[in-house]
Length: 192
Figure (spheres, rainbow, N blue to C red):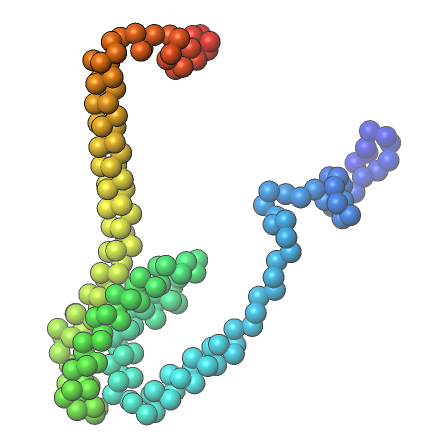
């Protein structure tokens, strides 16, 4: 491809100006250098070692916890966007539903028979998994609820401002709405 000055230009990396590399900074490119990602193997190894110790030292607790926290594990594996508040919300609700059954296990005797007795009850499974479902419900219904609250607050603010405007008109008359003092009327006339 020939440039206007007659020289050939490379079509692979055309110069766009700016910088030592000949490339202009893009809006999509960060202006600072990205930090290299740390290797998370040490963190993963630490978590795996803690889980292994719990599995060996307190197998009944491990059994109930793994069965009860399966939705959190599934949410972690399925979350490809890695948005932290999603996993935290589901995990908090699910852990809150599993803890009462862990305390029951610890009170009744911390052995495998008690753990299997707890896990053989379908109401135990329903309660633990409904905790995770409540976390999902918070994620879905929370923004809807917040939008409703903010819309209600905005409507109430608008009503109070309209009442204030009405009282000003009653006190000062319609003269305060003249073109000289109403900037929105001036802008509409200038635009027309």
